[in-house]
Structures are given as structure tokens and as C-alpha cells.
Length: 148
Image (tube, rainbow, N blue to C red):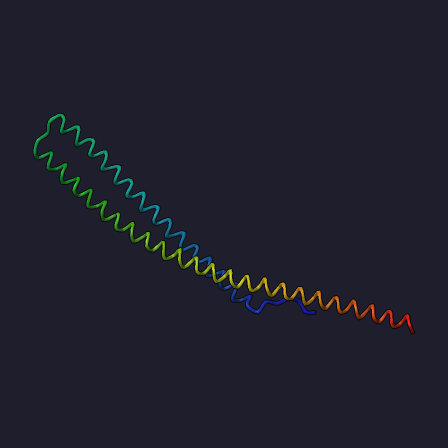
């Protein structure tokens, strides 16, 4: 019997390549999300430090002009944080879409791999059956020769 050959092997390889590309894209999207979260965390830390400084200055007396500067800075910082949070939401959305595509590609590849496993099992059974028939024929021929 000829050696096993899976007709969809090129498709399986193609699906594997696509899956690898999608995994890389998802990994990059996830990295972007983490980096954006770090940017936001740094902005929040700056804001907290500035608030502590502002509260200390309020206790020790400050001019109205200084208070106005602090207030404007805090408003600006809040606007920047809001903008960066919106950017984070966009990046999370893109990451989720990449994950969905990657999962779908993985399902497609797994279905073809499962089909290949089934075909391999069928091939093995056919080889076993052929071997059994060969042995039966050999034994039958041997008995026929002994009887003659």
C-alpha cells in the first residue's frame, strides 16, 4: 500500500501560517494595551503627587493666582487622562477583534487537524486490513500446498 498522503496538507500549512500571523498581531495589540495602561497609570501618579503638593500648599497659605494655576493644571491633567482612557478603550477593542480572529483561525486549523487524524486512522485500518488479508492468503496458500 502506498504511503499516507493528506490531500489538505497545503491548506493545513496555510491555516497554520495564518494563525501564526494572527497570534503575532494579537500579541502586538496586547502589548499596545499594556503600554497604554502604563501611560495612564503614570499620569494618575503624577496627578496624585500634584494633588498632595497642592493640599500642602493650601495648608501653608497660597495666593489666589497660585491656586488658579494648580486648578488649571489639574483640569488639564484630567482632560489628558480622559483622552488617554479613550485611546485605551480603542486599543482594547482592537485587541478583542484580533483575539476573535485568532480564535476563529485556531478553530479552522483544529478542524482540519481533526480531519487529518480521522484520515490517518482510516489509512491505518486499511493497512491493517490489507495485512490481515495478505496473511490469510499466505496461510491459505500454505495449507493448499500442504494438502497437495
